[in-house]
Image (cartoon, rainbow over all chains, first blue to last red; front, side):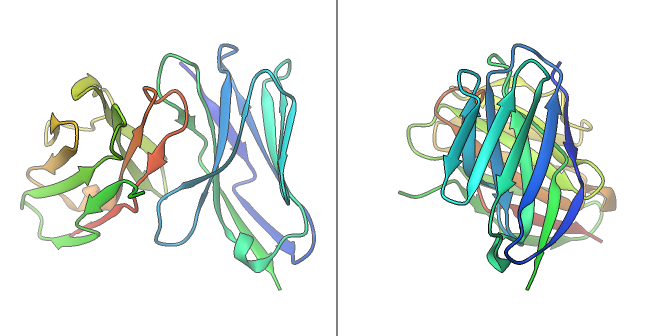
Length: 111
Length: 114
């Protein structure tokens, strides 16, 4: 089955700097790659997703890139702000079974 | 629109007691998922339903755990008897497309077994 590895597990950046979180997956049939943000005491919320027919997608300060050949995808957050502090999860969708999640990255933005 | 609704939000119970967690999925979604989140294991899929039918319960840790979905708008996750190692956050999620696309999480039920 699908296996998703996520790195780093913790990340601290200065406010205004960029943050990058990377994930790899194992199943070449996976074609859907969402990213979720989980704030303290809340459930994970979808922030951006990408499908296998595109290599990059942007939404304001966040972007996701996908390299299907290498089976990895990344989340990029530019101009980080304190409210970006949260746990971020990547996931991969093999298309015939539920999403498989990475272990999460705890991002701290230091003001 | 209302999201996935879970209750209770917080539960503290004594070891050996029965715990019932409840979930109302987003209206119109035909798939429902129960996840458990711990520091050590991250988000674990326990069981999921399509059209109220359990499809895969291989993630349910023990026979002490059971889940039902009697209709399209309600599901329960029951732990009987509960043990301290069951302490975790339990999330319910729903999806309109069978779960291999976007899924939407509830706010979670924070369970502490003492």
